[in-house]
Length: 386
Ligand SMILES: [Zn+2]
Image (cartoon, rainbow, N blue to C red; front, top):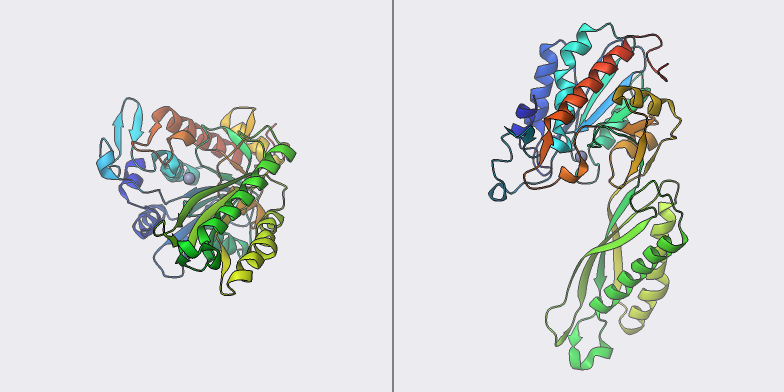
């Protein structure tokens, strides 16, 4: 199953429909109906399928189908042909996160054969890698169904450790519109690169403030909100005062913090400090800030039922918090579904050249699914294992 999923080039900017149609046919061959939720252009789709009693809440298993780009010339073997060597499966998306999807789909016959007292809901999304875009439509569709999942497990790579929290993220583009001029007459122009630099320094100061004032949580690798500028483009030649500059920046906020307030601290600075200075020289100047992506943090109480449930399945008692984002925050915030992240493979393999997953991790995920079946055939099927 993993070989088949890897063979679909589902790089985010391409259609994922061939993969989705394959999965739909696989489920249909086992008598399981799928609900597809397409994007606006009909080029991509989410898939949702329920196995087991449909009148009761069950366990949502969620994976994304898209992968980040792979440059075949850099790879030892074709990134879209799964290659097994040295106890690993190599291929784009093996770790992030087609192995989880493959194990989930390969378990379908056993889900069907078991006398499930609560259902499993299989969810596959598109465009996760470009800002958790696709899953939003899926969450809306799930919301309109008569029965909602009781808890969610997002199978992003965690080495099968139960993850209870991650940060959120907001990404922005700022377009600085100055007034171009001859550099010998610099004071009569508005230097877009210099105002971009003022903005970048302001963002950096916000980051320094978050690092010294908190809030803190050492459960994360970096235990506070971070700010960062990643792209600057501007300027033509040294003897021209630049009229345009473009900046991309982000912040990654801790659970429980106010992302709107952080955004306001940036926009207020632009409106009240930078733009008045710029417009005093040239009224047509200004800074346009657009949010280009966002997802919320995830924070599930360590004593929540979903955490105990997932720990039972993973056969371990520890939990952790991670820096990377997942669809889990959206399932929690917009779907109202208590969610954890737990899946095979390690995040340091995600997005790399020669991405691989250890077969031992795939086996661990199979055990996780087998234990899920055991739990769902018990009474009561959900909640904390005793
Ligand atoms: Zn992923």
